[in-house]
Length: 443
Image (tube, rainbow, N blue to C red; front, side):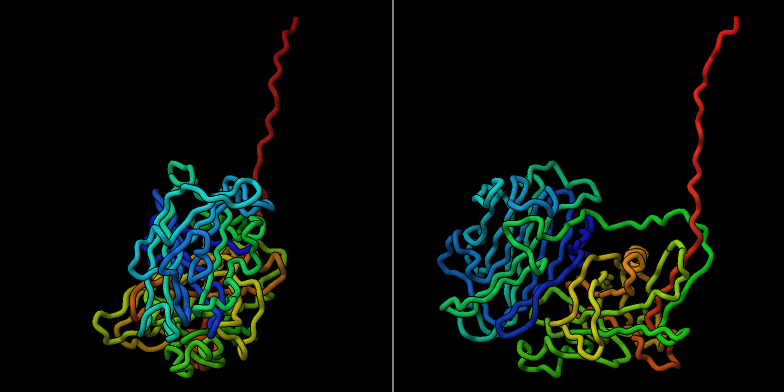
């Protein structure tokens, strides 16, 4: 099951991020940002949606029949065949200017089904379009934000770091007055709302890798072309050109764009859903067969070289970006990978703050590192290559960051994505032997 590791007490642009869905005329895609603090869980869901419809006379019973998002939480983890009393369901619908309290509802499990519950939480929503909602004119999308207090979940504050809850998300879509049926967009992809065992996982706090006892013996460097290694990579989405090949009909074409063979990549996101054609995500796969067998992984680092970015010369200019690296469980083909068929993430592994570059500084640029130790260990244990995705949770405009890819010419090979794995020999854990002290009285 996929897992998201939520960071504690971070600004919104540093929240963890995962994604679901596809971009199409009647298909919705969504980014979900998530974090928490001492008071509540923060979720911000951004939806690419061609037609925006909400109910001007809302009914609690049919909130999900319109553009809406449902969030499922279980304090018992992703376990169980029915929603128990520690399972919660929160619904929120898109709305323009009307009072939000009429457009949200909470439910709680009773061991068998969902029942309405008096649970306090806050939602906010907004939309972006050249027109307005509730008509047959194309729009760009909308967002819904949840603030769910821990007190409403029966807690005095956040659970201890490392605690794992069950989490699922459903994006509901309506594109016309007739309510033509459109399937929900789900995370995890095959989750069942009534069955928590099919949900994903929400872990509180970011994972910390603690290497097993080992004596470092060497470091293996994996880079495309080095020692015959093949490292495949690609960016998807708008790349560095905001998906201009799909303009102006972005909803029907943008999700199928492919950039095979491109010698640099862009990682980009922002809070304004109107600019989603500029969003860009990156995928890379490293072989691990050059790491000596029967060795212990001490550490592993991914390095990308930054040499440029979006918004050069803009006022205000670009700001720093928190770029996340996430593990991926499926193979993909550079010649055919697109935003719509690219794999979903399994888990966010680590994040690094990347500063913008004001002027071109030449190649290979500035190296930035990400800790991917846990991902390497898990991939190696399963006999798989290391498959990674990288994405931002930015809010600001001009957030794109440019790095070299594996397709960079040989003269710039140093700037290609690089994996460095330090390995060693296992070290026996020392132990002590304690013998009971027996006193005898000698007559």
